[in-house]
Length: 493
Image (cartoon, rainbow, N blue to C red; front, side, top):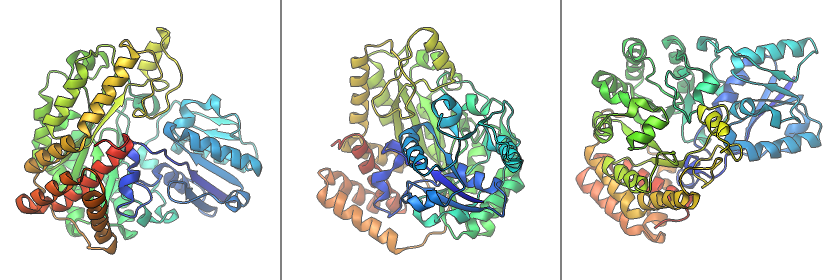
């Protein structure tokens, strides 16, 4: 059996880092972890080829030679999915599809031969068994959730790891919280499930054996959902594993703000190699936090929480949202002030949207306020519902935020504020490669000479060189990130 696995293309968004990747000669930020895992669930004697459209192009022969085409996608990849479907139909290729996009809106995809939805560890074996009997069904669904130790080690042999800025790994699924706008619990449930420590160490060793060195992204929606297990089991084992191999990886992940309440946990994460966490802050407005049920963030000095995490040795990236019913015209400036004071460099500010199957979608639907399905991109100035605030005022306010925080001057100030506070705790394996040298030279030419905001590049260049030389490479990296953000938000100055 010849199997073609296709990862659809992501549009140019805030998280694509498309403009930054060009500096480091990488094609994509992350590999398609879901499809790599699905590949390992397929019979070992089947021939498998993975085409990631973010890295390479899809050839007609790839489709012609495939007995089945497997497509895995998120909502934001919808446009590319439609193009893939049309190409497969030209050659009468049989298609199998799964992932959040198809699980959330299966009724949209009548051309797909077999929809294998929810968690593949449960539904894919059912499809494969029926396929063996020549009785495959149109749709496979389940209301159960997989035990994660049943999840196989992703097959990284199917990709060229050098094409990606970072590799990915998953420790947990599910979230104990119930934020109104979030679709995580709709897809993965409230019960926090984890892989065993032994399983994670095998996955890390698998990545290590590929020869890859650098950033590994734990894609968990809340890595610290079981703090006791982390502190007593996984993190001590990761610290030992890393020390024995000379710290080949550094890690990024997502966590809730209560990470800042636990000094021991922060210290252990840093010693294991974690350098960045993405935190859903959403808004500094208490009424809006109450509205969206983000109770964990209420009654806190959120800036102090951010400072504690960054002082511990981990950068905080954060998500912010505008468009809540309780937002007011003053919300926009409060968001700007908070982001600037916190020193959060990577501040992803998005417009509230209501994804399928969320509590927010159900509430707004009952109120007659849903306009369309969510696109999955909350930074493209689109709304899929009727906001309480005047729409023009909301969109103008949103633009005011991004124009303020990603202007060269404001961005430069946040980077300096962060670097003054940040103290790296570990030295990781680094190689002075030709690619890194070229990335630096491109930054000098593009950001230091050609770009109209070059004065801020040189200010950061010399400030870090003379005041915090240990963070010089970070300063250059953040300069490149800033260039990407300004491009995404239409060449802000």
